[in-house]
Amino acid sequence: MRMGLAIDAACDLPQAFLQEHNIAVMPITIQVDDEVFMDNRNQVELHRFLDRKLGSRSHSAETIPCSVEDVQQLFLGKLVLEHDCVFCLTITATRSAINEHVNKASFAVLKHYREAREKHNLSGPFLMRVIDTRTLFAGSGPAVVEAARLIAAGEQPAAIRERLSYIANNSYGYMLPRDLYYLRARAKKKGDRSVGLVSAMLGSALDIKPLLRGYRGETGPVGKVRGFEHGAETLFNYTAQRVRAGLLVPAVCVSYGGDLADLPQLPGYDRLRAACEECGVELLEAPMSITGMVNVGEGAVTLGFAAEEHVAEF
Image 1 (tube, helix red, strand yellow):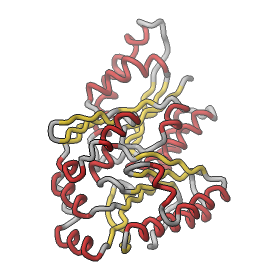
Image 2 (cartoon, helix red, strand yellow):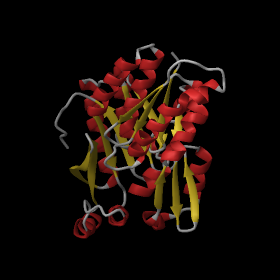
Image 3 (cartoon, rainbow, N blue to C red):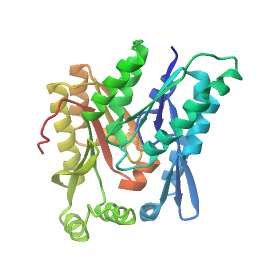
Image 4 (spheres, rainbow, N blue to C red):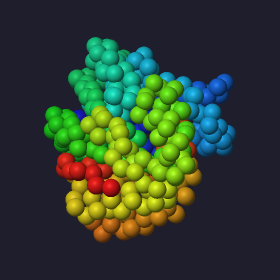
């Protein structure tokens, strides 16, 4: 059975990894004032967004996830011809409509795939499985990494789906923003009251940053740190501890909202890298998606791993 993977553009993974495993990307359209960007993890478009230096204007951007019709077109025009089963992984349904769109599209895909395949002399059934990773950005990465491993190992679809559901339920996505004013403005644009004006003012005045976590569909603060550099060091040191304690997927995914060359310069990153090397854990570094930067601001860090349930201690 030919099995494949599809993700939405907000799942932060390196372009080389996506190409190696032939992973399809469902794009997200970003409109900032009169400028439109197609977020499909294409590096050219990503650099165009960064080069425009939109700064504070991005908080008012409109993000339009891949529509039901676009998902249908991607599957019926391409994926049902290349694969017999596709696992489609999305960021948490509580923060994006893409999971709902893919689920709705799946009905039409499963209804019409036979005629699409017959035109190309293909027979046999087609399976489409949708997985909500229950977290976002780099936090969604470990589930995709595990999916690629299971497919390469020749596991059956039912076993893969069960395993991915378990990994999604135990995926931790962390985020460290740089600019609380930006984060509050974006939250206000989306009707999210999680970052209030007073907390943003106090946080900026005292240089206090929240450590946010996406876990099992819920997103919220799990700690506070003083200063972005100290916050990065705290997050990386904590993750190194989790790596040594043991992960469910031997991978840590990190994304950065800017020039990826700046990521290794952050305090504590060398210790995280050393811990991963010591424990045989792959460290996957990726630019943050345009969607991610629009929602949390440039210069932010997101990080993800999958582990048994535990209490976050910062």
